[in-house]
Length: 152
Image 1: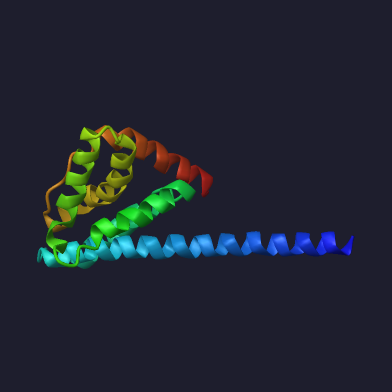
Image 2 (image 1 turned 90 degrees about the vertical axis):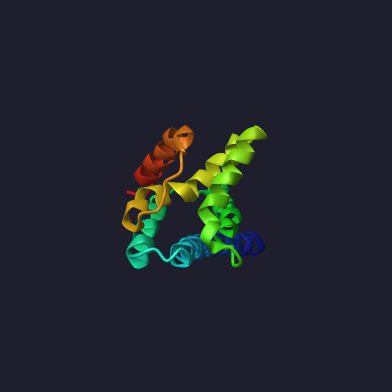
C-alpha cells in the first residue's frame, strides 16, 4: 500500500511541476514573440517602438495559449526572429499565411495570423501597414473570448 501512496505522491508532484513549467514556457515564448516584434519596429526605424511593443504585448497576452497554440506560438516565434531581415518579419509572416492558404493549410494560416493580429491593432502607433487577416478574425475573436472567460 505504501508503494501505491508513494507513486501517487510522485505523480502529483510531477503533474504540478509540469504545470509550473508550462506557465514558464508560455511566458518565455510570449516574451520572445514580443521581442521579435520590437526588433521589427526598431529595424524599420519606426517612432515609439516602446509603446508599440507594450501594445503588442498587451494584445498577445489576450491570445489563447492552450497546449496546441503554445506549440504554434513557439514555432511562429521563429518568424519574428529574422536576424538578417528583421525589417521584413511581418511581410514574411503574411507571405507565409498566403502560401499556406494556397496549399489548403488554413489551420497554419490561422496560427500565423495570431502574430499579425496584435501588429494590426498597434500599427497605427508606428504608422506601419496593416495586413488583411479578415478571414481569420472570427476565429481569433472566438479564441480570445473563450480564453478571457477561462481566465476570469
